[in-house]
Length: 193
Image (cartoon, rainbow, N blue to C red; front, side, top):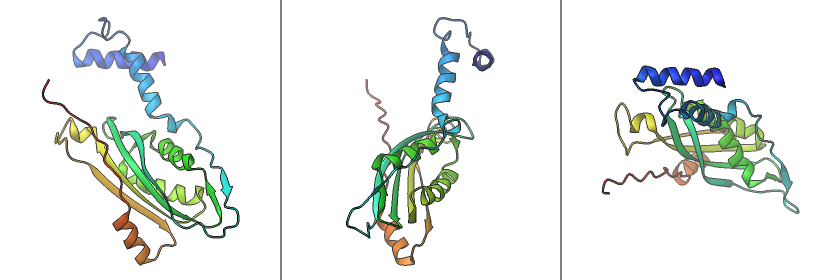
């Protein structure tokens, strides 16, 4: 970690500031710690999914886990991406995973540099296998700091992506597209002080 901190100090110098001044002395360590936290999915194994039988039931039906919050990094700028994921799936059998396991999987997969489009596609394909699902439909809504604070500098712009995998009829897919929603995280920017 010490080598990485030295590189951050050199970047601070390159930007024109003094990494040894009191306000920046601990910044390289804090920056590296933050990056390690935001990319922990690269080093941690995927969460284990435990299933619970649905007693006296052969059909579970459709399950939706709404607005799972995640934080990630844009792989182009290493700036934060904040969003929510809604996952809809139908189990193949009468076993269902614990509710928190879907959220843990989303957060684990998001904890790495990413493109939202690739994240959405990978999430739907992996969840289909992990959840033993007949189908999985995923919708992701996210704010990208790279677009909010640099470049186009648009505070209101967000991205929505969706993907699906499995045995879905056209009618089921159209219904999912119309009824599954995710919410955009709100960042309140106060202009009056």
